[in-house]
Image 1 (cartoon, rainbow, N blue to C red):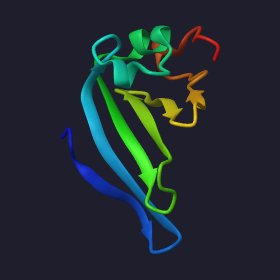
Image 2: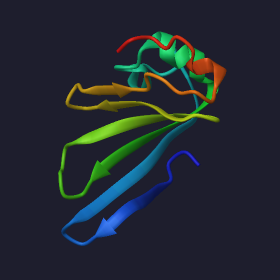
Image 3: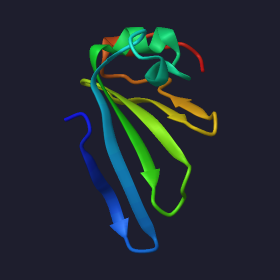
Length: 104
């Protein structure tokens, strides 16, 4: 549910990773914060109001976080880090939406 927060990985002092659910109904153009850094074509292809968006961060690295976008049936399609780095899906062979994906 939106607002849920959980430990994704925990080993005291080694890995203290947290995930917060930001949206379970993401579609491009409805939230400027969640749209930031998101390629419109990619989001429109995969996120018709049903993508999950999370905020992922480590308690060991304050101030750094990434938003991850998950498409039903595909998984992670995009990561947007607050450092400006963007990592996106470039291919898959099990879903027709993956044909001719936009180049990052």
